[in-house]
Image (tube, rainbow, N blue to C red):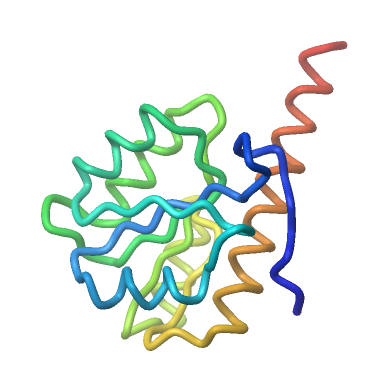
Length: 146
């Protein structure tokens, strides 16, 4: 699937994505998959760092490990849901089972990625999450202008 998608999410036309993971190696792996210029990647090792980025940047998609140093994906999702244009949250886990998928979807997350990452799956899920975010944003803008 083509990962060369352009969007007005950033000034350069790249899709803004936030990777929240305590492990440098996992953030590096995702950075190698989500290569610029299609993706503008921000990284955070902690919940606090992630919130700082979210407060200062428009982010379309967030990928978060199930556990982070000062929180977890549920805490981050609750924070995202209180924002005016929240990014879609993708949870990543080595133990991605049906229970986790059901929990993520039921609480309002977008999807789950299994670790170790499959390049095609990461690109597909991130692209779909961005497309859903863009569509939701366009719908809100159209509703506000009526």
